[in-house]
Each structure stands twice: as structure tokens, then as C-alpha cells.
Length: 218
Image (cartoon, rainbow, N blue to C red):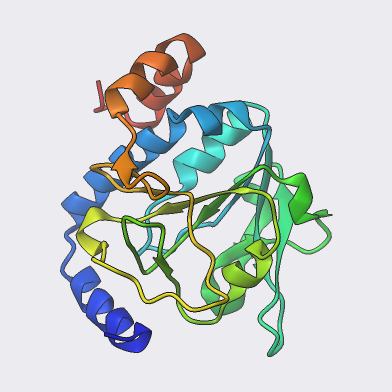
């Protein structure tokens, strides 16, 4: 199956995801991500602002603000080159509808060089357990990530994982794939243990932040 066929298949699957499933999955994905040691340790992140079909990143961005991290989000520049830049924001008030109706940073905010950012949170249509990622096909993220020494983490609903994503020469593999069920570590083809992550997070104060973001989670 090629990328075009896989995109069509996943988009059909995505239509069948219920609101209840996505609400629960979003909370679990955010929990796993926010308790992950690398997120706790870095001082800067680049994070996509989600559409309704993508894993929700609002909790990740809000928590990064609360922890004093530098937060940057994507802005897609007009033109056939499909160039994206990382723009620093201080709050969600710095966002407005941009290309294709996706929330993007307002004009006049500082653009940050990618080499100054420690961790990238990347969207996908689908991903696999080996770090393969299927985007929308324009190549924005692959171009931006190319050559950067940065943690590359992808968020994906478990129901939309693929057995294998077709990868081409310029496609960038992810270092971790976070779903509501597991955190896939492609380098060793295993999953990081959530129990250990939670135990490590007790001392960090993040558990209290999570309770405020997801009151029903205990």
C-alpha cells in the first residue's frame, strides 16, 4: 500500500472515532507525554496546535507555559516551497486562524531557530511502532526537522496506528510515538513503562498539574 492509499484508509478510520474515545485517548496521550522524563527536563518545545481530528496538544502547551519552558508553534509560510517556521508564543492569545484555518501565531512574534529548540511534538495522520510517520503529504515537518539535533516525538491515536508506514529518503523518523495505550520506542522496538514514568513524576509536581487539566483522572 502506498502513502496515498494509506492516507485514504486512515481518513476513513478517523471518521469512525467517537467523541468519547477521542476524549479519553486525548487525556491518556497527554498524561503519558507530560509525565515523560524528557519533557520534564527540556527547557524548550516546538508543538503543533491540533485540529479536531488530531490528538489534542492544549494540555501539553499549557503545562509547558506553567513550567516556564520556551514554547514555539508552527507557522506555514505561503508559497510552493512549503516552508514552516517556529514562532514563540506566551499564551493561546497569541494564536489566530492561519493557513487552512489552523491556529497559527500572530504576525510580529519572534521566530526561533530550530537548533535552539530541544523537543518537537509532531502531528500525523498515522504512524507505526518503528517511528514511521505519515503526514498530509506537503512535507512541512520533514523539511523543518531535517538536520536538527532535536527530540522528535509523534502523537497518534492507537486506533490509527499502521503496521508499517511507507518511508522515503527525505522522510524523518520519530524518536518516540505516543498513543493512549503505549509509548513506542523505535530504537529498541519496545515500549517505555508508564508505571515507572508515573513513579518518577510524583516528585516533580506534574501530577497536580494533570489533576487540574483532567479533573476526572485520579
